[in-house]
Amino acid sequence: MALSLPFLKTDTTIHDRIVPPSGFTARLTILTAGAMAFLAVFALTLSLATGRLAERWGGELARSSTVRISAPSDQVAAQTQAALDVLATTPGVQSARALDSEEERALLEPWFGPSLPIDTLPLPVLIEVIETSDGYDAEGLRLRLAGEAPGAVLDDHTRWRKPLVVAANRLRFLGVICLILITGVTAAMITLAANAALAANGQVIRVLRLVGAKDSYIASAFIRQFTLRGLSGALIGTVMGLISVALLPNTQASGGFLTGLGFQGFEWLWPFVIPPFAAAVSFFATRFAANRTLKRLM
Image (cartoon, rainbow, N blue to C red):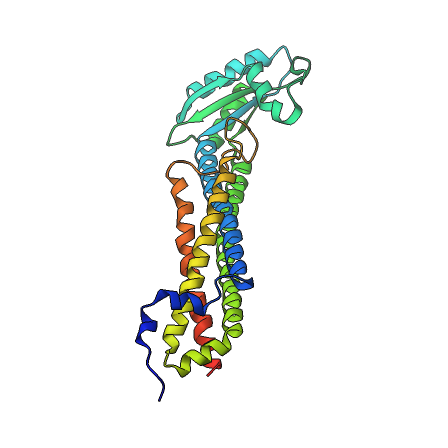
């Protein structure tokens, strides 16, 4: 009859001795959890930032339009005024104004640089149109402009607004897919590490069984150690990821496509969900590996 050792159930130091405190599996678990948490921070950043981008593009561009005046130089002023008069009497148009040369330069500067000789270029006059919440009849406005200002062309941004919003939403979906893949890779790597640790301690496990230790106790020792390693590694990776995100250029420092890539406001709290989530993944992955391996070692 096997000996019963009740102190094994309460002495955490014995728990710690069953699983090697260092070595290949310990380093692999911590390194995997840290690397995956670091990547998860950036995947979360991508998902949140592209979500904001889609909302901003969808909201701002949906209420703005442009009228372009392309006419002979001696008719530009007259047609611009005629277009402004039409817009002023169009239901659904909140405001309309012609952009000056400095504003046109600012629009072209990201593409051609600050030294663009705008005064020597035959650029059309641009009229910025802001809609009301109800919007306007685009086809009716085009017909009125064609009669009053033949050189006026209405662009309601529909043809390029939708692809931009779709692209931003797809990037957000890609960020979610990355988080799912990171979770899967973390679970797989920790399962492999737990299997290796269990196999390496097969002789110890047999001795523990001989003296009365139950499989649930042996499994709990491995689960505890690998959960703590996953938590500590993920915490290190999350902190490093947050530091890296904080060092990214902000909105004022850059005006490119990646402007605003980072956390804003309460979004900075989201990354702190990663360490406990990594610990939960480690817990279930190790429990699965321990139960399966202990059955095989019977």
